[in-house]
Amino acid sequence: MFRPVSTLLACALCFGLAAQAQVYKNVMPDGRIIYSDAPLKGAKSSPVNVPPPPTEGDKAKASERAQQETRERDALNERLDQRRKRLDDADQRVEKARKDLASAQLALEQGRTPMPGEMIANVGGGARPGENYLARIASLEKAVESAKKELDNALNERNQAR
Image (cartoon, rainbow, N blue to C red; front, side, top):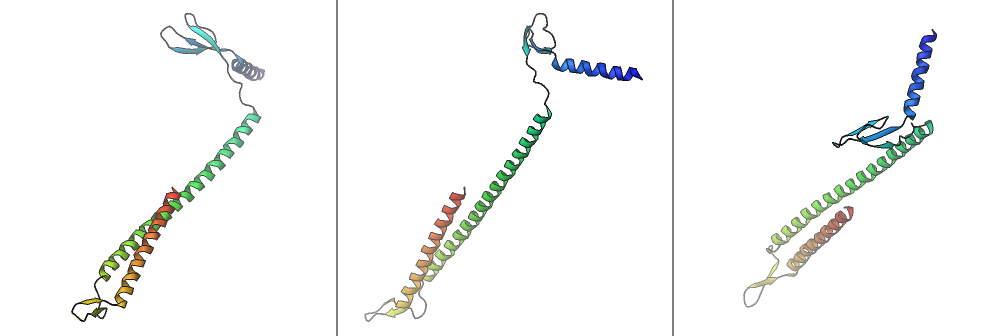
């Protein structure tokens, strides 16, 4: 019965001594590096400082640091998700503004053809555009300008989101 206890005590003592033993870095003539507990013959040996094993306080600090890094990573991911959403929203706004501008330009081109009753006959022959035609064209041109401004605003918003 005493034998296992003494064996256990001897093992603990050996491991304790091994943890505190000096370690050497040996650079062999052929360039190989060998770590050992004693300098090797024919090698350039230098002692290596082995840090002590971590204490409970070190483990607690490491755990807290890991938790802090996790919180920081989560906060960073949240900010990145918000930025991606803003950028996606800005891209959608740019696409809509481009489509609206194309529609407004198409409406203006198609609207240049006079509708019945919009032209006024001249005394000497020919015709000139009437007030209704000019007001309709002005409205279509205003819609194109408004669509251009909206596209510029959307592009600026997207650039700021980047």
